[in-house]
Each structure stands twice: as C-alpha cells, then as structure tokens.
Length: 116
Image 1 (cartoon, helix red, strand yellow):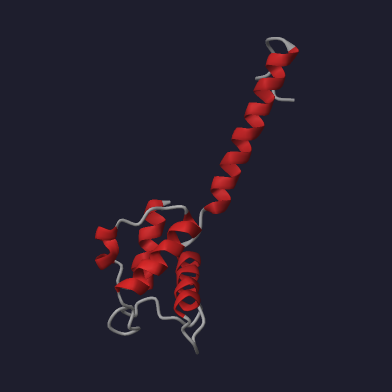
Image 2 (spheres, rainbow, N blue to C red):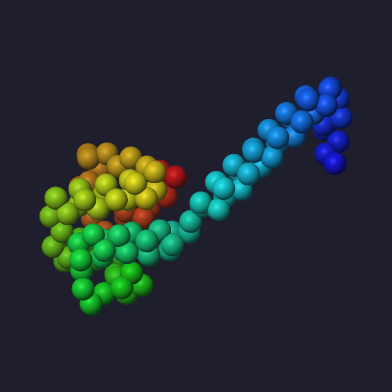
C-alpha cells in the first residue's frame, strides 16, 4: 500500500487513492499516445491516400519528401480536407496560415509532433 495515504479518515484516504489512480492512468494514456515521427509519417500518408483516393501506393511506400502540390497534385481544397481529418485524428488545430508550410508528409508529421 502507498505510504502517502496514511493520514486522515477512510473517506479522505479513498479520495486520495482514487485521485492517484486517475492521475496515473491519465499519465499512462498520454505516454501511449506519444508516437514516433515514423508512426506519424505513415499515418499522415494513410490519411492522404484514403482521403484523396490515391491508387497504387501504400503508406509505407509513399515518399514523405514528395511535394504534395507539385508532385502529387493536391490543391487547396484537398489540403483543407486532409487538415480537417488530421485535426480530428490528433486532436490538434492546424492554422490556415500554416497550410503553405505543409508541403510534404514529413513536414506535416513534424508539425503534428510539435503540436502534441
């Protein structure tokens, strides 16, 4: 038993114990949500492939350095769609002013990691 929960009434000890359990669970969930940059790159590639219905490529074979506008042909509407899905998936906000900077999958993944 945790020695920090020794003083006070039984109710106070119970409340402290429950609070410690929730804090520990929350910290564990945050740690499990931490992704490597490679995981984020694969997931961003998957989102782009799925949302834009790109054929003959997988998330693993998608070149993260490929320019999304010049080489893939993504337009501003496509990028807005991908941004919305990424925001939902990662629980982050992507500022519209940042869209022009997000020119390839690696830059998007780094942006996401910086926001997490």
